[in-house]
Image (cartoon, rainbow, N blue to C red):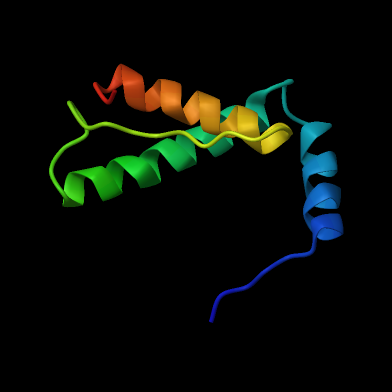
Length: 79
């Protein structure tokens, strides 16, 4: 079974964590996790290097996560 958390629950957890870590650290962690998951998917169908990736980035904090994840994939050779 998968769990889903309410927006309020997630924001409360993030707020408590953001008080303890340097600014931007939480976003970098999210981006690292997203890039790793995307890299795993790309490797299952071929490879990361030379793959083409499309980033759908909206406004808000999650948009920053996606941009940083895209940058990580680009450093690994994805276009």
